[in-house]
Image 1 (cartoon, protein in one colour):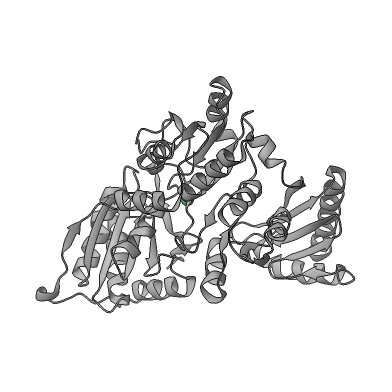
Image 2 (cartoon, protein in one colour):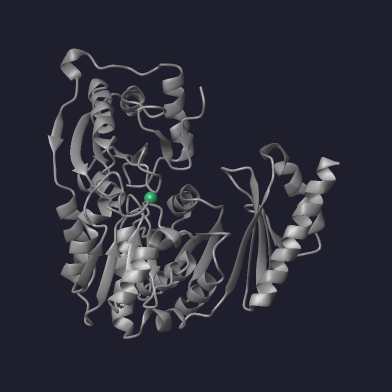
Amino acid sequence: MPKLFGTFGVRGIANEDLTPQLAFKLGVSLATYLGNRGKVVVGYDNRTSSEMLENACISGLLSGGCKVVRVGMVPTPVLSFAVKHFDCDAGVIITASHNPPQWNGIKFWKEDGGSFPHTEELEIERIIEQEAWKLADWQRVGSTTRADAIGPYMDALLDRVTPLERELKVVVDCANATGSLVTPSLLRKLGCRILSLNCQIDGTFPGRMPEPTPENLQALSAAVKAHAADVGLAQDGDADRAVVVNERGEVLVGDRTFAIVASQYLKEKKSPRIVTTVATSRVMDDVAKRLGGTVVRTRVGEPEIVAEIRNRGGDLGGEENGGTIFPDWSLARDGIMTIVQFVSALSESGLSVTELNSTLPPYHQQKRKVRCPNELKQEVLSKLKERFAAYRINTIDGIRVDFEDGWLLLRPSGTEPIFRCFSEATDAQRAEELADWGMRELEDVLRELRR
Ligand code: MG
């Protein structure tokens, strides 16, 4: 059997890889894993196949003896919130996040509202592989209740923030996806003037593809300029990530958004502990310094950040792709909270997005890659370690070399046959030099190994 769980639960093309039969098996296997009892909250995104998969997965959970709370169509952060709000033993979200419309996915959540660690996903995979699931006897088959999770989520979030003092004109682009159900009305309640773009629910994603890349956000950039808005805000297909467009229509890189949100969210926190990955900008160290806190760097990926926070604590987690975790709010990435924090920071500052961004030190980045077969990755890595032995290196994930004025990261991709080369420096030319050097070393090693 091919591996079911990837970096974000099970993903596949609906009715081809991800069938109702598989959704049923995942449901009954989760029920078995929970000891054939307990309460599970289930939600889904607005893809055309989501309701079908939700019904199948719920059948599996019921046949395995679980009670099910159906919260219907919700963004992923709302589902994570609902796990704790309804005091559930686990949660399930049916979504393929940023993938194209023919895709779908199923992901499990723990009772603390964070995602299943990979070790526990493997346990579910084992139950499916060995067909070791257990059905409940007829008296113990589960039942469902329906509940609204969006209302309680919005109330709880609004309890934590103060309405904006300065009214902002905001263009919101939710990709015709589930963010549309929450983000525009929440921002309106906070005191924003909203212009909505792609905020009608449509599982064919007619406005744009759900991945919030600069290419997919061209209409948002144009709308921000045309309407002289203060800021543009975009979400991915399940609203666990957020991307910011400045008043000139330019997309901010995720590190900068994370840094601005961190400054806002942690401003009253004593010596905050920020958890991020080795691939994130040094601007996070600047932010931590200003706040009197520390930065802890993990391997790349949301599960790595969540594991670090679960094991050793943390006040904020985040990645350079625009996913931010607010641990005292939720252990899942929350793109809606990210937007709310960004807008609050912008309103309080009295500045434009460009000016707010320039209150933080500027950095230049280079992101490159080279093809590298999966079976060569470990060898490439050990050769690189020899080559960089004279430097101060960090080997948590790949090799990161830090200098006074910048850093270089050479890291094998976890999902594709490529080796990544990231660099950052205070000076654009230096960032390029570092990346050139990294690429040269990588290509040298690859040539050596192929000989
Ligand atoms: Mg997502």
